Image (cartoon, rainbow, N blue to C red):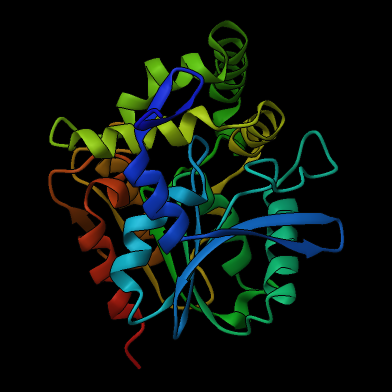
Length: 289
């Protein structure tokens, strides 16, 4: 009997997987156009968490456990991730992802929530929370954590073409397992624990090729700033050592929202994996009436 759970070349201690399945179990929620895979933990006001391009629902385990006595945290596997049904369009937009999120909230009968978008998840979250969105009335707070801006604005056309080509070439050259082995370290700081590094690699190693390709289209076509400010209170935070969406960029996002940027000290891009207690504390504050 082995003491690790292996996906490709990436390993995670069996104790961590056992804890994940016990404390943050996965289930599939039927929606009109397929399934949405979610993990949830706790009871009380609802917090919905949207992960980034190289992650998944399981990454929110520690945040969910820390909030279990205060909130019901629900993390989705985005369309094409985990067991979630991919979107119909091969070139989906933030609107397509937001529509699937709307279907999930309907299916789970969630009328009010705090919505957190991390990294690429911020594009879906911000589109869902913009003025005029059919979901805006259900969102009590919007939290943008290490938010990705996307490359959809006309001013970023050249960068969009470059990033699109680079992402697809990297996928073709390295594959999912190779990306997890070579690229996951960019998501954490030098201060990250070995277990945090294992979690980031493990989540990335479980990506699905199809879902990742669709997420590249969202990254290249999305424009976060165009959907800001949101129609409800917002907090913007990022790791002080984030090299993927650096503090200077996140500060621009915060200024567009009219709020100060909140720095999470000594953490990288996967801030909630490195410092779940600090992110849980921030979310706990949004639950106070």
